[in-house]
Length: 132
Image (tube, rainbow, N blue to C red; front, side, top):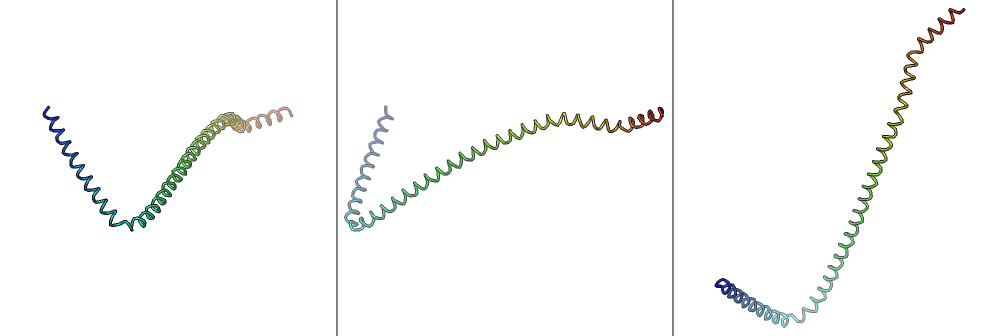
């Protein structure tokens, strides 16, 4: 219970400090408004110009963000296209490997025939010479 009362006292002291600070600020603002009434018109035009520049910067930032999003989407599309091309390349390579297997078998048969051809040629010549 004691802690709560101490905390409430601290809070009331802080609220008093805040109210005093707000009173000081309002007094200072009154003094400033009286002293600088002629300068406010100049400052207001500068403030308007600065606000316009800030709005322009926000618009430029939004445009850049849109451009970055478009570039990200384009990059993602390119990645998908690259993956599709890689898949097609792998499929074509697999298909070529499947096609080269029968071709290699034919090449093996031709190579064996080329190795056996002289033997058959000599045998054929011997048979012809035997009959004549």
